Image 1 (cartoon, rainbow, N blue to C red):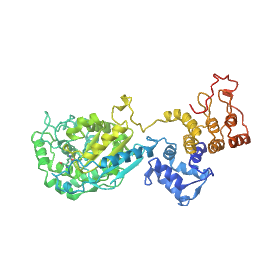
Image 2: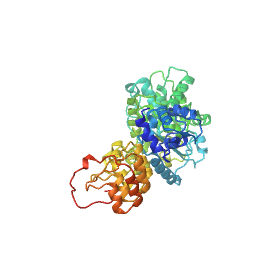
Image 3: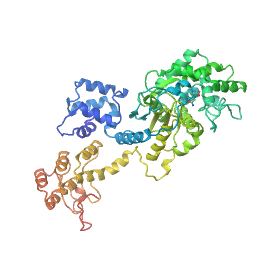
Length: 529
Ligand code: GLN
């Protein structure tokens, strides 16, 4: 690895300035960026760290660090330079934790009662997981707990059908309009088709299109494999009790399938009982929010699963599915949800929801109490609070709002970096200065008055910051527009130790650009602008 890249990152990690970091420093920096220990993309890096002795406190020098960075490919470099899609992931995570705690006290809604097994789950459970398109992850609450996905399988069935049969064929058998009715309403559109793929009639239709030529076992096998790939992991679980419970109490779904068969909605030769079985089986697939968030992130990432880099769906399949989720994903609350939250999302009566911020992240929520529409009460409450805090609504980009944008851009960071460095120096904030070094930001940059971090640290008497800046090799005698050096500033302010430090350090020349410039005013600022 190019040491020009690795060196500044190494320096930023090297808090003590002793020319050494530990495996723990590296791991905690990656964790801060949202990259988990089990991230499959970091396996080479883990191996390289293990080669170093696997002792978290073992010292790693700059040359070894360069190799380790190389093993982590650009992902680690980007993480350390805060260039992932959510650069300050730990700050973002802190906000989500606060929202999570706040929403936890919401006990509205009831367990789904029409599927007996769902009526027996522990209602207090609550989980939120996030995965960004760069694979930064966060898990809150019961994120390791399995639940049946229920209707949140419908986007997967729909995408599967689109990939197998193409959009024209699929939409000869289902519409694209919200129904405005409940998810299992015994109703079809004017053409005698399910209103859309996100309600039960549409889910049964998608299931009928999923490899109808294969035996049932293979049809399910392929679906399980698809869900595994989408969620970046092993085969999902399956809740057999839910499956039987569903099937034995599914009068409405049977009625819907018979109705659709009667009016000729299915492709010819469809075995509706098999389609129903597959739909029930898909609803009985078990995932954790951690896995469901990976699926949501795959949708956010245009069909490529972020933690594995595997393309699962084409981008146009994903675009079509997100359009459907946006207009129809939250049952007869879809319009209100699109208005207030403005994210494509899909819910299930188990209390699962997954939602997508395209090109940024996927989020999965699970809490079993559902509202009168069949959507998780806490899930909806969380998403509402989320878009009040962050500009994740589809049309937030039109507003000049006070909402936070966690995906701050690098250009913005750079524009602010000069100001931040000067400001940090004036406060003596060495850790902020180190962070800026990690961005690759030069601590030599001056503001419009020619004031540099060294001027500010000197005039404010921050010995440690002056020492740090000198150790970084900044220019020692830059002239501001009043032709003052940091040394002159320190002398005037009476900071003897800094005067000594600066006088001792050898001059390496002055800033040509400010030399000979006439002062523009007699006013001379002491502090950062
Ligand atoms: N399995 C459920 C049903 O058939 C799916 C419905 C849902 O999650 N909204 O009723």
